[in-house]
Image (cartoon, rainbow, N blue to C red; front, top):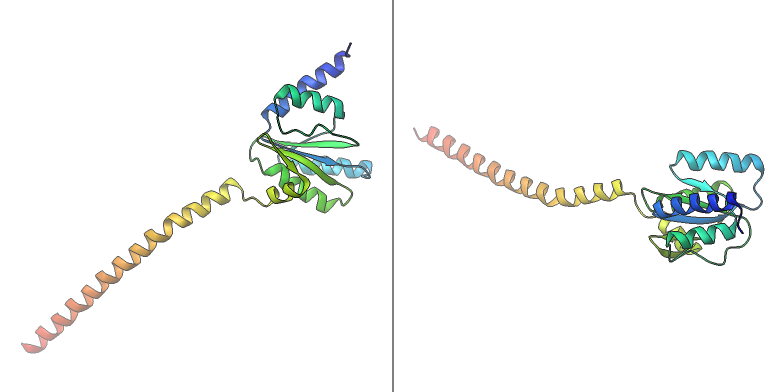
Length: 174
């Protein structure tokens, strides 16, 4: 019979996984205690949650949360980076953590119920944020409108120059 602490841990992790839009699994083996503490602080500041949970409990919680693409062959020391907002944020944070701490390795991940390999996780880290995409869209939409405004102002300017020339010619004639 499972102990009450394990049942509570699985329930808590299941709830967090069901809210998460993306999860990155990292191997933190080789990090010292102070490094893990600074890693936790950095991850928290970025708006991502870092959880270290036993592999068996992680598999059970992921199964109960209904995450189809979650890896079932977890071994070794693993930590989960989970994000609720921007789905690419945990991948960007994992990439930055791996850059800061070379011992930390990205193993796999899940992006909207799709399994993600370590190589794909690096690609997801390069995705632009929602704000960047909205800025690009606004720029793309504003470009043709700006071009039309410039063209119309050019026509108006040419018309004003022509009227000015006609006025000068009429003034010179009499």
